[in-house]
Amino acid sequence: MVNEISSSAGTNELLNQAFTEAQSLQNPVLDSARQQNILQRQQQISQMQTLTEMETAARGRTEPRLDAGEIIDFADDFRDTFSQLQEAADPLLDQSPIAQPVWEERTVEISNPDAVTGEAEAGASPQELELTVEELAQAQEMEGTPLPADDPEAIAEGEFEFVVEQGEIEETITIEVEEEDTPEEVLRTAAEEIEAASPEVEADVLITDEDEVFLEVRAEEAGEAGEFELRDVSGDFIEEELEMAAEQEAEEAEVAVEGLEEGDDFMLEGNIIQLQEGQVELELEETGTAEIEVAPDTEDIGEAIEDFAEAIGNVQEFIAEQPASPNLEGMGARLENVLAEREDDLAQLGIEIDPDGDVIIDENRFEEAIAEEPDIAEEFFDDAGFQPGLALEADTIADRALTEPITDFIEAEEAEIEEPEISPPEDFQIYNRSGQINSLLTMDQGELINFVM
Image 1: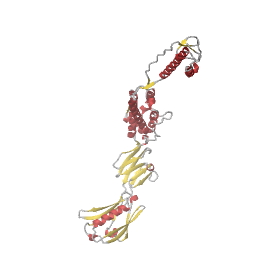
Image 2: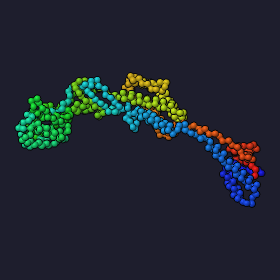
Image 3: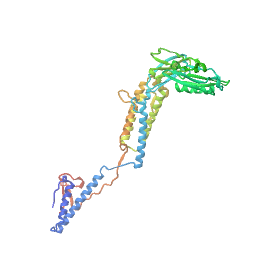
Image 4: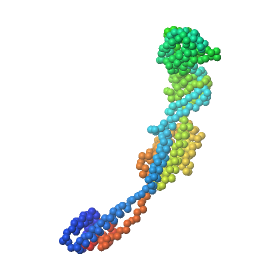
C-alpha cells in the first residue's frame, strides 16, 4: 500500500503519527503481522529524524584556529598594539580628550641666554622680538651694625616690639632680652620671628672674621613688589640696638622691547617680563641685548610623529604575523591606503614612507617646514578640512579595534566533519513529482514516501 505524506508536515507530524501507532501496539486485538509492520515503520521515522539532525549540525560548523591559551595571548598583544597606536595618535589631535596637543607646545629661542631666559605656555602665539636689558631690578636689603657675638651687654635688657610690613602683611613682633642673652642668641630669635611674620622676607645672622654678628634682612623678590619695612613700636630695637639701615633700596629694572610698550604690550615686575597675558615669561639675568622667538616646539612635535610612525609600523607588523583574518587584514589595508593617499602631503614635511611601510623623517627639512607653516603640518595629521588627517584616521582605526569584540579579528575555520552516509531504510523510498527517487535530505513539498505496511 502506498501512503502519500506531504513533506511540509515535517518530521514532528511523523513522530506524532508514530506515537499514535505506538499506543496501538498495546491493543491485543491487532495480529502479530500488523504489530511488526508498525514497529518497522517507527524505526524508519526515527532514522530519518536522526539523519536530518546530523545534516543540520554539519552545516556551517566552525572551529577557531587558535586554542584558548593562544587566544588570550592574541588578545593581549592585540590590545597592546592598538592601544599604543591610539596613545601615539592622541598628541597629534587638536581635540584629544587625553593628551595635550603637541601642536600647541611652544619653545622660546633666545640668542643671548646669559642676559635673558624664558618659557612659554602651550598655545602661546608665535612671536619675535628684540629685548635690551639696561638695568636689572634690585631687591631691598637692610643690615645692622656688627656686635660682639658673646657680649651680653651689647644689647640692652628689656622687652621690645617692632613691626614687619610688606605688601598687605603687617605683623608685630615682641622680643624679650634677658641679662645673660648674647647678641648672637637675640639676633637668631629676631631672624626667626621676621621670617615667620613675612614669608617673602629672608633674615640671616652673619658672623664676621672679628667674631662679630649682625642681622641681614632682604626681600626675596626684586623691585618694588618686594619692598618691606621694619619699624619700632615699643623701644628702639631696630634703630638703636641693632642700628638697621638700608644696604640696597628696591629698584625696578630698565628694559626696552623693540616695537612694544610697557603696560600695553608687556608687564614688567622685578626682573620678570610677561607677554601675551602671562603665556610667555622672560627672566632678566644681566644687562645686554637678546633676540627672542616664541615658536612651535619642533623637537617635541618631531618626537611625537616618530612615536606615531613607530606605532603604525608595529600595527602593520602585528597584522602581518597573524593568521589570515578578513577584519584584521581589512584594517591593515585601510591603514596602508591612508598612508598612500597622504604620501605627497607628507613629503612636503620631509616625511617619507619606504616600500616596507616604514616612516622616515628628514629632521632638517621637517623642522624647517614646521617652523614656517605649523598649521599645514597640523592639518596633515589632524584634520585636512576635506578629509580626516593621518593621525585622526589611525585613531579611528584603533578605536574600532579596541571597542569591537576581539573574536571579530580571530579567523575561524570550518570543522572537518565527515558527511554522514545516508542509507534509506529497507523498503523506504521517496519520489518527487516526476516520479524520480530522491534523497531523504532533499525532500520537497508534494513528494511521496513509499513504505510497506
